[in-house]
Length: 299
Image 1 (cartoon, rainbow, N blue to C red):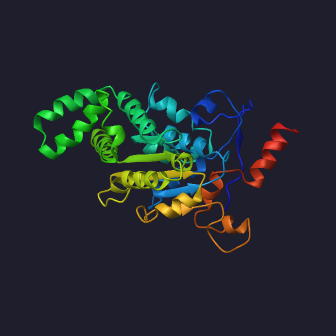
Image 2 (cartoon, rainbow, N blue to C red; image 1 turned 90 degrees about the horizontal axis):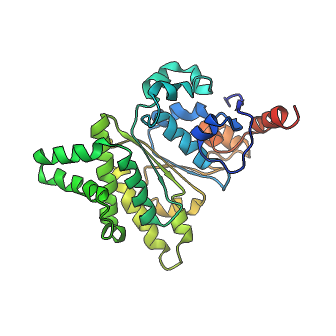
């Protein structure tokens, strides 16, 4: 059944896309935390497409904030943020998963290679133990393991020039980061990718296919592996055409467009879907819109 709408906060700010920041600043939000158990229970990676301004980035930042290890706050402070939300009705889930997973969130809105490497670099430096772990681990590594860690070392040293022009290096750096975080925390990573189709849309026609292939080749070794490198992968985009054209390399994804689930007329095509909770997480239901108006526009 469709969860009952819940609205939190009171301040209105156009363009805010950070879930934790919006909560801390008491901004007006529709509580979508009911989707969080689906992130760990769903077997397949998710590819979800929505038009712009449908809350895609907001939802990904909620996933990152809830599951990700605490940064700049205690675990108890992080958990307290969700106590009064819908997910607060499941304290065992909060205890088991809130702040317990390494999370990688890639935002590909800008230039593909440069944005990716800057994001990975920022993520690496957010773990002060990374440099120490690499230096210590190299003493007892096999040649193949040392090769993987050498890419992380190159990132830390900002030796980007060769990497920015070679998708093989890009793939190996991301794979090395996933392997490192999995080993460090003893748990599989959650990979979140925002606006993955933007580099494709922004590319000129002659290079569009090459960019698609690069994104596919970077993700396929990580997402399609049978070794369980990721707990979950969620990708969001605007353009559904990109999903279909990349499916040959990423065919284990569940692709969820706005009207994808059944042959029923709208809105039953969503409400009767097995992926209904995902479908109503990205965007507002009629009940949510009515509650927003009744509570904050015409009380």
